[in-house]
Image (cartoon, rainbow, N blue to C red; front, side):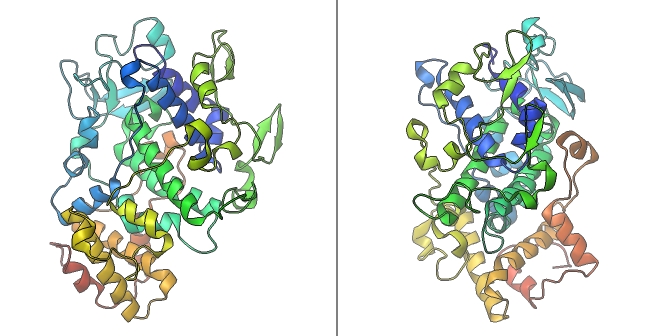
Amino acid sequence: MVRGFHHKFIEVHLESKSEHEAHDCLFFLWHRRYLLAYETMLRSLGDQYRCITLPFWDFSTLSAKYATGSCSTFPECNPLLSDMGALETVGYDLGAGTYTVSGAGCQADTCVKSAHPVTRNFCQSQDAFSTKRCYQYVAACIPRNKWSLTAPPSDTYISNVYNQLFSSKPYDFTKVTKGVQYRYHNGIHGALASTMGTFASPGDPIFYVHHATVDALYAIYYQCVVPPLNVDLKHSTVWPNRADWGASCSKVRNGVTGAYEPTDHLTMNLIGANGKYVDVQDPSSVLKPFFDAVGLQTFADLYDIRALGEMSYSYDFGLSSLGGLAQQCDKYGSPTTVRVGLEEATTDEVVSKEDQFMREMYLYCQAQNVPQDQIMERINWMQCVFHNECKQGVFDYSDAFRTSFDVHGSPYCYVTISQLANRTLSINVPGWEQVYARHYSCASTVM
């Protein structure tokens, strides 16, 4: 932030052609290159940072703790937001109001600055940086909502994420892209809101942790689904079917609209030293050294995190539910694959409790003759009901978020609850409420 690189990444994410590519059919691959360049930038800041790695967020444990009632808000359920300086404002609270980050307006409860390095040097734009007006310069704070009062959304339950990755066979790139982008991804942006609820969201460092998690989900899908060795660059598991997206899944090059190709270079533009938009690797781009170091200029270059040359990496999920998902793939939840010897599989009580719940509910659904390929979705519906009746409710996106994030549609659980209410959908598993109650308590009489 001090050197002025951070807000240039915001600029890339906001530029119209770049943003179009970032939030459509090639969502995963665009953000993968973006994250690699940002991480490379961080490593360039000094020898003490040369091994820094963007962390992913173990949201599966967060949601499991939330379900038990042992916590009720994001920071209570997981220390990540606190670790990112989310809850402190020291000396310069500008209060609630409308803030602007790189030209994108947002409503925020406060403007956070603390002793934490993540929050103490923020600047909202290149112009403000150049003229020392980073939110009145002395404040230099990040517009945020009061996350200490924010509950985790229903999109973080492991059954919900399972269905985003493995919703129905045949598995393909379009399904997983729409699943993760429109459910987990949008759900977190909508819940955190303020700067995170706009396309200027890279202004908040939590963006990079969130998107590392999105990238991790795609890595799980790729490892589980994509055929090994020499996959065709347009195989349905790695490349979007344009017909499933309509006109939006189209590139514009030199005024001509056409279909994307795996060998196309990604579109990432910023304002160069000449005051005009240029590619991030243009000589006038201050981010050129970082994108040059990454290389990986085409979509096909970015398919597999294990095949990125010097940029290759992997995820260590440990014994979390995400680890189970990565190991068991579409068999996750099945009684033949749910962790054998639960007492040995994890020392985390809430994760063990979730494993036991998944196993018993899966077996119960089988006994009720639910088709095998529908069981995980039925469990997802149950968790939607649980979240709505026993937690803090299921809600639609705010109008402000819809506008600022160009969101169409509603959260999965909101749609599910609406369909259950108007009887266009039925869980159709008699007695599931009693099975659920053996694992998770609920004050509501509806369950």
